Length: 80
Figure 1 (tube, rainbow, N blue to C red):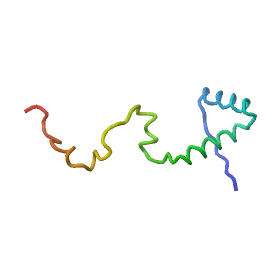
Figure 2: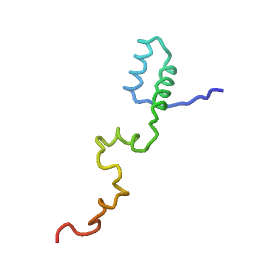
Figure 3: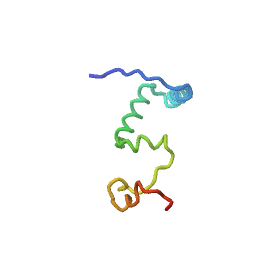
Figure 4: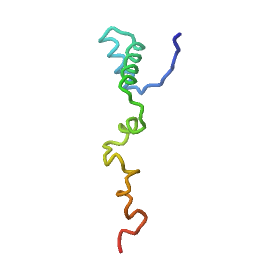
């Protein structure tokens, strides 16, 4: 059974979708379905992965919240 989903697209995205549909001779729905399947296949499920496009560069140690050496001095004034 298939389901219908309605989405709102910005004008530039809708225009690009229209151009791609004409270029490939595929329906817009097929292009969106294929893109969504590919996105989900890559496993973009983490919150960090979803946030990257809005945050720019995300860096730092992966164990920042669990490694006690990063917590030394937390809550203490920086200047003596």
